[in-house]
Image 1 (tube, helix red, strand yellow):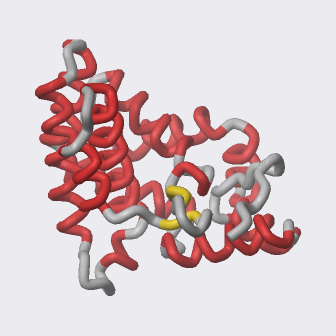
Image 2: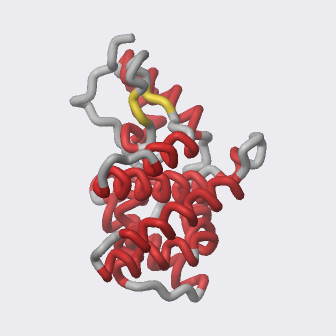
Length: 206
């Protein structure tokens, strides 16, 4: 499959595309996982193809920003009910795993490095595995926590294969530019990076 064909497949059928990649990397690394865990990782990759799922909207400015992990953890700790606690812990684990895997190189140049994301992600999934009542989901999140480092490596290799190694800040700036101008050039760059802009979205006024 050529480079252009891979990108076309990614845009048209992201779940199948990422499943093939995850299967390939897991087999190469000799890493066996539960079927639910593999399915979860595939869906995680497809979910974060869309930039709006990786960034939160600032309530005051209306601008999409990368959330601080400590703030998400605070939301989990202070959650008034189980559903909000579960949602924040899952969000913390997902963002930590994706960021540590796909942006490890850019994190190494910052004061908060990849180890911080790994520690936060492990803790989030671990806590979630203890409080969620469903046994299948409990085992799923326990595995994500216990083997977090290995799954970071899996995502890092997929990042190299798909050449998705732009920093989150650069991607956010490019996405904000596209939201404001609907620039075809910005849209193509986002697609080249594996991110599919949603044409129905409008830029939130500041």
